[in-house]
Amino acid sequence: MPADVIAIANQKGGEGKTTTSINLAHGLSLAGKKTLLVDMDPQGNSSGIFADLDSIQKTVAELFLKKVKAEEIIYPTRYDNLFLMPAKISLAEVELSTLNVDAPYVLRDCLETIRKEFDAIVIDCPPSLSIFTINALGAASHVVIPLQAEKFSIDGIKGLQSTIEGIKRRINPELKILGALITQLKSNTLLTKTILPVIQNYFPVFHTSISTGVAVGESHLSRRSLLDYNPSVKQAKEYQAFVREVIDGLKK
Ligand SMILES: Nc1ncnc2c1ncn2[C@@H]1O[C@H](COP(=O)(O)OP(=O)(O)OP(=O)(O)O)[C@@H](O)[C@H]1O
Ligand SMILES: [Mg+2]
Image (cartoon, rainbow, N blue to C red; front, side, top):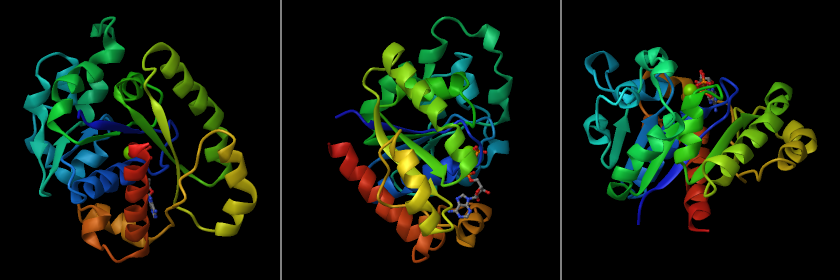
């Protein structure tokens, strides 16, 4: 069976895409799935957790410039069963004018050749609807949408839904929405009373939500997944429950 490919997407910044990508990828690997985390964000945030970016030359940028094959940019991480396809700031410099008509399909074509080597592939997207997010959604079998239960997060939800629908129509009819994941939750009352029904109008919502806690930022500082940094903290347990929901969702 070729890998399930899960894009973690939201064009709004700071909604928890990278935190979710890191912990979903590590959680899937802990569940015995050979997992590849693909970083499609020039910020390189998830890559920086698993690799020393200064010492890495070949990244996703070189893939877009057709200078490397997929296998050449798959790096092991300190975690068993978990591999990284990194990005760094050089990705922002990939001159879009040098890309040709197959630009939306670069990642899909590349993953096609390695999909049978993995059980799961998780793609961390940038905070924009750039060609890189389009590549991720074009290559994915499933999409997860992390978002905060806040007014400004809801404002972009309609645009995101129509982007996903557009990708399904034009590029990737196979794409399935696994669900929206509420992150950085401060108050359950506000969520259940006012915001949850709004989100449910657009996307199915995971039962699990991720609360706000300092351990999340600390885990990033220590360059570890939260599941590794402190598996007994509340947010780690929530991410573990989310991983189980994803595994169940993939079976459907
Ligand atoms: N559950 C949480 N509790 C506390 N802080 C969190 C939580 N989730 C994320 N954060 C913090 O919020 C910030 C944004 O999170 P993250 O980088 O995961 O979002 P993102 O969507 O990837 O951002 P970007 O759009 O810039 O790529 C980070 O500083 C992160 O440490
Ligand atoms: Mg990010």
